[in-house]
Length: 71
Length: 263
Image (cartoon, rainbow over all chains, first blue to last red; front, side):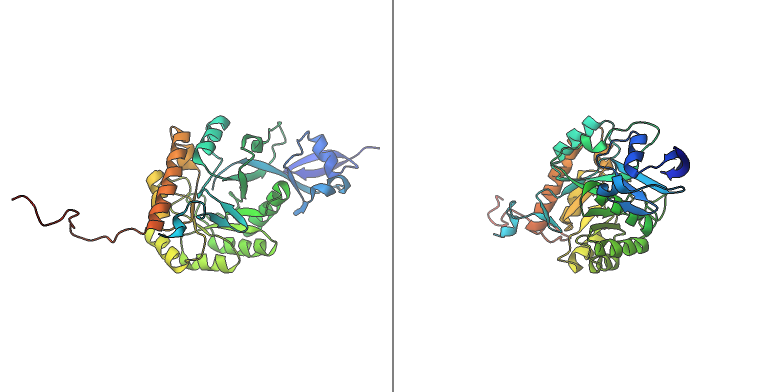
């Protein structure tokens, strides 16, 4: 059964259905996976752990990529 | 003849990496990706810096890195971070995504000047070096701060020459000259403030090992041509530094014989 919960992704609150791994979240958000990095509650989650890391209510997730920049 | 002049042996070393080019450039502010690519190619740079930002969730975004020549080394930066903690987190994320230990450490202290917060920078540098990062810190052009960053284990230091994006040129050449003289073995990369080719040449003549720039190229009317100008200026300045300039004197010194002049 779907179980809605609230998480925070890049500073925005979102309702998602449990159970959900980080890997699932990337799919839900339709993100390209290459050269992304993900932080869960302040700690980097290695790519190899994305499929095994279950999210829970009130988790704070940061998903970053690279953009043009100098200094 | 000094063998140091041979171009094949005169390389820029950063940690375990070696570069023939002493120009490092940014990837921001270009009008188009194709303009950026042309400028990168014309510059001869072997390393470019990129910023880390949140992925937009409301629209699909292409991967910016796809627009970079794959032969370029990528130097992620912590631009936009205002505390050691933010910079440390950003560095860890960059390492995870790019599988590189290189990080251009920036901890900004003020929005108007974008001057670095040297205290937070040093704090972040100490943590990141312990975690195995190759930390290249942006800092105020100050000898004492440079020493502390080197003591913390940074393989190179990146003093500013003027505020980021200002194009004001080398505002305190004496500080760079002192840093060079007092830290003869340090790798010094001038970061920020260069506006045009002569600024880059001056930085190199003062003994900088390399120069990092973005806006001077990206905001030039013809960025590829400016990139080429910067490449040549960096090379010219490097040669001039290695050649050892003449002493300045107050009065004229004739280059032609003083005798045998037709009277």
